[in-house]
Length: 233
Image (cartoon, rainbow, N blue to C red):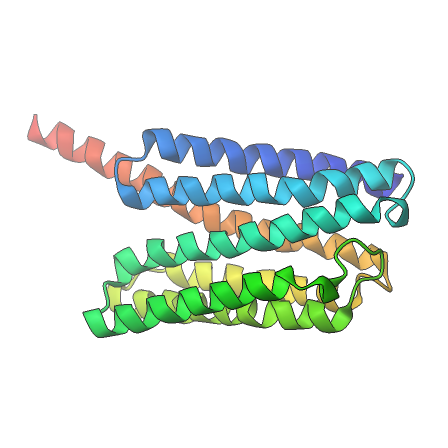
């Protein structure tokens, strides 16, 4: 019950924060770059809600095992929306990275190939999404293309950081690394040790960190624009 209350408070704060930041950036963002950050935040919040809400409900009522179907459906939906999250993040980074046409084509083909592979693997019934103890093997298999997407994002962040001397992108890379660092134990051990699912909290905070980077960049951009406006007058 205590775990359920703690997760309820955290999840409510997280989902509302990500959603509000997302809507703010979509509405107030002065460029496509910031609006894409907003869309990404909304996808993160709405997608995670399908997993987090049933999980909190299960913890506060009859338990995780008795709510296996809702939890499995939520995990399936979240698996897809997190893939979309990385697609949006890639295009945000690509707008800054600005690779030549050949590298851009190769990167996009790789991205969408991994996306298709991820979704196809998630669709196999062998995943046993709706069972309390689902297939560990398929849990690993479907996350291989997802992890490769994450590695690609990390590499691009580091390339941008070196190219533009922007310290925010190494931080973004660290956030992605941390998210996988907390997520991998959940994939491997959550079915046999349910309490390890609590690692999804720091994993979630890492993704919030990515969203906050976009918010901070927007605030800096607005402030710089206001200063330029004052100077012009």
